[in-house]
Length: 535
Image (cartoon, rainbow, N blue to C red):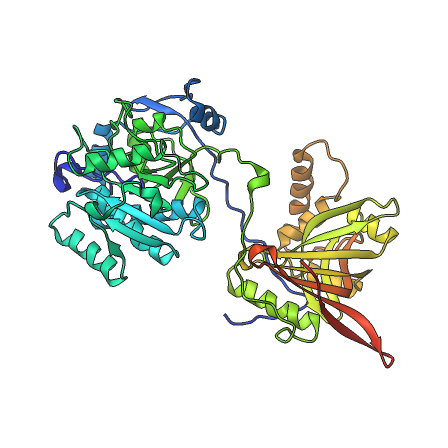
């Protein structure tokens, strides 16, 4: 489970793992705020050789997988737990800190499912086999399978040694109520790649001792054989291990050399010492519940979780072949008889759907300009108003984009709403908005943003960030009494008056929908003409 160190002596047999909208038009001026930025999850990579001590792990040069993995790790430290420390933390969590095993198991399984969804898309790794052991690590797998079902995957469960306790019976009932298939060991294909795209290894966790017994010994060997099977043009199933790769020694790793190495390891609470020997492509940490008292007691160094995520990557993502990155879009068709006759109305329809979908900053747009030298430049700005008169944004009139617009008052806007497989291009001529409109918007902004607009002479060179801080601090002191902050003369808005739109909807096999709106004159009146463009 997401690094949950559950109390093995209380809950496990000695050899088992102890893991555990409505449409909203854009008013003008619209006062959409940038959400507070989330600190990135800085990658860490290290090993712990004793309570509170840290060392830095490096990948053996003899391992080709290690070379690629090592190159992706930052030289920063993350704490690793011994088996004893893991058990102690479980005792504390489920003792004085008041956690129950089912709470930790739920958090663990959700963390595992979240990590899987971050790397393996259901469009490519739909069929998931969760192999679950009889202890809490197996319970983590059962919970993860339930969440994966709700994430759009098709999970199957192999649970050969069921734990006769109400908690586990309940997990099985929950899965059966979702019509998730349970498969016996005898019914599994010898080559698991034939039927499954991804395999969740939830057999044994950090409390495991000794040699795996039937049928788990055979299942572990099947996983080990996957890397040795020639699948031809078909890729081998990806393997995701929960907390510990099953069969590994919790501190020394794959000491026999006959085990398997998963493609992803989801450590729970904190990585165990054996994770130093993991050189797969994806190492995640789950278990976003570790209280300060445990962090302090065990001197833990753990990465920050980004935003509301239940998992965080340890180390950088592996390098990839950029040319191989592609997406086969699946979307509703965009048809001529379904779109609205006026492009601004169609834009508002799509914008409302982007807002309803919860997209971050759906009003972010790429603004492209070009000066008299013919050298285009682009940057992201925020849309602050849109109606049939045009699209409005605000900026510094001394910036590069402002200079280029003064030389060439033609520009284009691009909205890209990736989760919806949509983009909108808008082309047109640009003019400044009235000072009155700029004043209204300027004074609707937070005071900090008003001061920042004065402190920053946009696009000019500064010798260091301290110059900006000093200018800002001086302005803060000047207007500390709450008096009105005057809008500077060099700041204001622009309006792009559209002459052309293109609405793009991604479709399978690159047969994308592209509908273009262009202004034409009919009987002396300007009307919008719609036509389909080849993708």
